[in-house]
Image 1: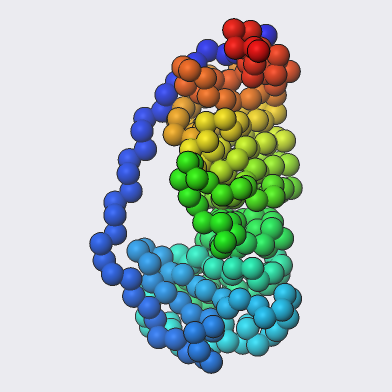
Image 2: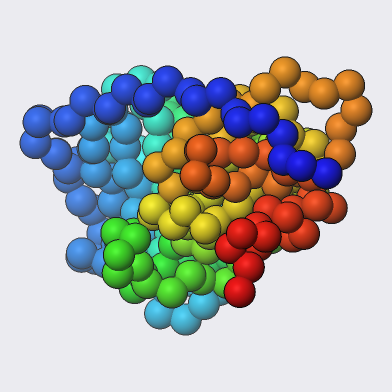
Length: 270
């Protein structure tokens, strides 16, 4: 089976305006620079938790300090501000994340994103419906020319709901659907064992060899490296497909035929 016709190019995304206002911090409280603290950045708040001395230790003291910080800094932020929780390599389960979200909700703050280097924390946050950014502090996002090795794949058994964004420095496997309004951004490949109806961006650091695979593709937008496209009108019958970059842009091919005549075309065979 040949590849489907070329996908329709999507309009180029409008660049986000650059923020020229200086960042500001709410006053810190507690034992020092390793304590819990809030920081204002653009139109959101960053809530940073200290790195754990030992994994899974001292949650109760941290929880008490977090509540003190929330009460002490209430006058420094705007009502209904969005919060990004930065937990580094601290391991948090879904119950602890919900405790933090409830405490923020009491002062009219909304937990929206969790930034973590722990796979278990990323899985718990995604299952709770929060946007997730998972990357190792030692492996910051780089240009494609000198990109760091990819991390272990992020495996999630959940549906990515509207408003949820998953970011990972490696391959991402979703056992579930990506609903409209949900998005997955990976520096490697994206595999969806379900319906892809939101946004998927593979090769986010510029790798054009990455692919997006799903049992059913009805994506709002597909992105591979710097190529952007939207899927054509849904077919009468769905089948597993692979999105890849060809010389003509992003194209779709049946998963059963992809390795036969797409990955190694006859004219390019050795």
